Amino acid sequence: MHKKKFIVSSFYKFVYLRNPNFVKKKLSIDLKKFDIKGTFIIGKEGINASFSVSARQFEKIKSLIKTLISKEIKFKNQFDNKHSFLRLKIKEKKEIVSLGQKNIFPEKMTGAFVQPDSWDKFISDPNSIIIDTRNKYESDIGTFKSSVKTKTTNFRQFPIWFKKNKKKLFKKKIGMFCTGGIRCEKASNFLINEGYKNIFQLEGGIIEYLKKTKNKNKLWQGECFVFDERVSLNDKLEKGLFSQCFACRSAISYVDTKSKYFKQGVSCPKCFKEKSKKQKARYNERRKQIQIAKKKGIKHIGS
Image (cartoon, rainbow, N blue to C red; front, side):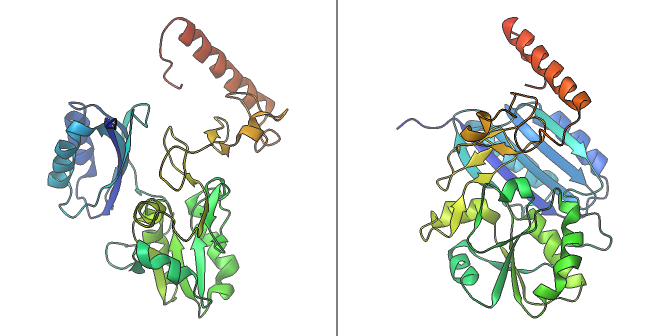
């Protein structure tokens, strides 16, 4: 059996970093020594990262990050035959995942963790309400059976969704899930601050659930959106059937690509009516530049 040469990994850690700019500069220097691509977001509240790296170099990357940040970091790994990201990006931000709320401290208190092998039983409980904390373009292509979709366009809208729906959540056993777990950490802390109890979250998110349970009871339906070049994963954690619209970043199916509203790199049925003529013209020019670069044998920075 052919051994896959790359590890696709993600991790996050809510931990106070006194000088995130120092961490950013240190990572910028150290990571460039390796065959690694992906995105690292650093802030005073911690670090959030997804990356792909040569399998033979993974343990060195793991050791470097644990030494710099925290020995308690948990890495969630998959395997692939190539890089899942285009380039290496290291950013410093106010929040490592943006909720836009004050006094959110997930490192101090979050909902209780439900292990992946106990999740099916938990979500089958009629007294539970299960919230998909991800955005609409993610939940549209896959979610857990009977879960409530927030249909947000970004995570900062979650508190708005909550205020509109908080009466439905009252006295319920609330379970939450997201791709890797980080959004549930903040969302659960937010609900606790709002006075809600019986808050639970899926340990490790959808990725760990599929990895450990193999979706044996088929309660996960569809595919899982991921923020890299694979776009989506099936329940075997293999590259799924979706591609991605450059204009709106939505996952699009083969049927979508046959629509009269689809134009490679410019628009899809989900965003054609939302994008202005000026935006479409800009996307079309970008598409032309990518084609010119390919003919010349040059990799365009945005391709």
